[in-house]
Length: 142
Picture 1 (cartoon, one colour):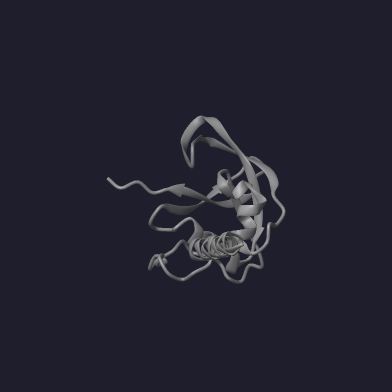
Picture 2 (cartoon, helix red, strand yellow):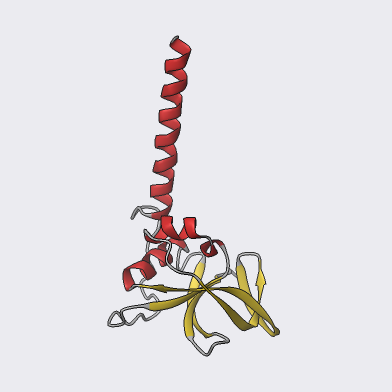
């Protein structure tokens, strides 16, 4: 009977560690320092449009990062190609993804998730629809 309690205790510890990891990765203020000069964001706007093409295409990831899944609308970005979790200029190519409408606070959460200034930079692009959107592009060290 002791083994049942031990397995139960191990399960509780594993779940607590899992939640701790998710909190640290997606929500905590530790482990990431926002850049001193992030891209200009007009806080007067009620919503910002973000084009996503990688892990943020998936509703569970968006829910963990922003606190809600939001509505993802299919969109296309011409003049770029996708290379795993990055996009690069490619005049004759395109990237399929989704647009999200996010608040300023949610955009800051996305910045934290993408480690703005460390792993990614946020740039403004024009989509096929003519709509302007933020997109995260990988930062490479020289």
